[in-house]
Length: 181
Image 1: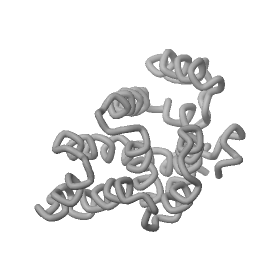
Image 2 (image 1 turned 90 degrees about the vertical axis):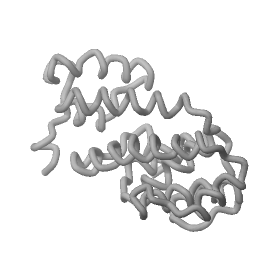
Image 3 (image 1 turned 135 degrees about the horizontal axis):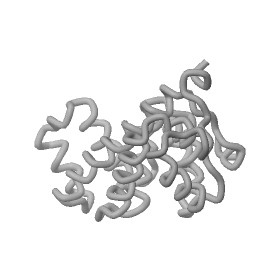
């Protein structure tokens, strides 16, 4: 039903404000993801997410820590598309299969440092940011910084937007990601 409420826009049918963003995504990805075609119904949301995602990618958190956060939010929010997409990203980063499986299942990670990111992300979500000092110090004790703690908030905001929008629009998994579903 969501496809009728949130159509799969083409470059011709999309709102004019979304077309350049859609073109840029298609050039970068090599195809136009269905999620993008559906999110194009709101050029502001589509553009806002992509800008926030780029900001999150530029943080001082290392790539595996960023992906740990993203997968934690995706699994928690039940976004099957995001889980598939970021499984592919973790595989491309050479992440251990045990880490990927645990992130997909929402279970403790075999890597203590990445588990600290997962636990801190869940604590920030559960407390709406009001984590206690012990939780913050535990995160910092794994080599993260107060800057990283704030970057976690940026990542949560960015990927909460993405997961909720993808679920609302019922975006399917593109064939290019099927093996990671």
